[in-house]
Amino acid sequence: MTPLPHWETPPADLQAAVREIKAALRARITASGRTVEEVFAVVEARVAERVGEIVAQKERGEAVWPVIDYADIEAGTVPADALARLHRRGCLVVRGHFPHEQAVGWDGEVVDYVENNRFFENYRGPADDFFGSVGSRPEIYPVYWSPPQMQARQSDRMARVQAFLNAQWRSESDGVRWFDPDRDSLYPDRIRRRPPGADSGGLGTHLDPGNLDLWMTEAYQRAFRHLFDGTVEQYDPWDAAHRTAGPQYPGTTMCSAFRTFQGWTALSDMDHDQGVLHTVPIPEAMAYLMLRPLLADVPDDDMCGVTVNQVFPANATWHPLLMQAVSGIPDVEAGDSVWWHCDMIHGVDPVTDQKGWGNVMYIPAAPWCPRNETYAANVRDAFRTGSSPGDFPAEHYERTWPDRFSVDDLNDIGRRGLGLVSR
Image (spheres, rainbow, N blue to C red):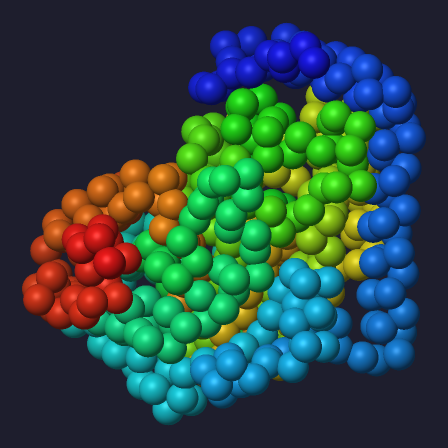
């Protein structure tokens, strides 16, 4: 099999590289004895079946998102049909992940933390072009090291849910252990607080796992090998092979860590129609997105709008079938957590005159693996100095805040997650 061209850093001439990789991928598919159109048709049929199920569920007024009680995860009594729904939809609400009163208390502590440190007086405006578009001041707080955030990240309850979610993936294959499902890296992210009465523009449907690197780096070419070598039926969106060590290109939502699931924990009660998260709950949709640019109606120097230094777009122009399945979360209460497969198309609905608060802390499932171990060194330095982590704008508000979470406050889970101890 002829090796594919690859670029481990963004190529200088993007359009030329796009033309080259598309020609090479088409040639590889053709060499397998199948046409690009035949391979895409396999994926399209699989995805269309899922879309039909979801549309029918919504028409019947049924909830599309699976819901599992934290108590069942803790007890190891999650029903088999609930696990099957999680695999089929690739997303989950965990009810009662934290006690309601604890989550509401954390929300209040975050307010005290930022107010005591005069955050609003010193706020310089959004440094992130992507989240800066949501339109409230501020909606995304560039705060990482508050006691509530760190307490949630290093809690037993969070570790248990992360291990449960990691276990849905195939973490070992071909004699390689791609990640440790029972040990998460501590991936720091921000806080969202949207007040009652707020107008928010929302976020358009997009993906976060990468941009052109998904086609152009050697590791990702191996990860998506079944899409391009004539074995498309074997593609498994839950297989972590070759996904946990390769390089990534810069992008608006670049994440240096490998996440099995993206996630957030609710700090307030939120109704389903108040500017909440929506996804296309079809894990296999990534195969559709990866093959779609190879069809003849897409210009040879275009990847359906995907490029470097921007978010990976998903839209009705190129992906109308997928957009039919966009589905929002159900009502959630403070203490519930929300999770979605790392490859999943997602967005946030706009809202006008929001009813109630819309507050979350972003905490993913990011199991220990080579990529996450590398990023942990950056996280350790940021934690010690109160700096913004490397994946985020260099705002560094917390460097002088005396009451941020300290090294002495870490428990065993926190130390493992930062790579300060090996086990």
